Image (cartoon, rainbow, N blue to C red; front, side, top):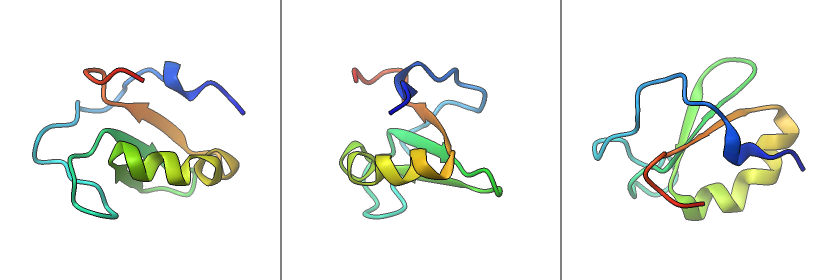
Length: 68
């Protein structure tokens, strides 16, 4: 599995208004899909879907304030 924790942030930082697309908790991870679009995840749901996102070739950005 690739090291996604070192992805460089190229988009605006996540804010308190950014919510997980699965459960509406605070978003900690942004995934850019190769076909376009982005998904926001709390840490729990990112952990659940990480392998599939990597398989799809998504670019992953972690909230820089959170320890990984």
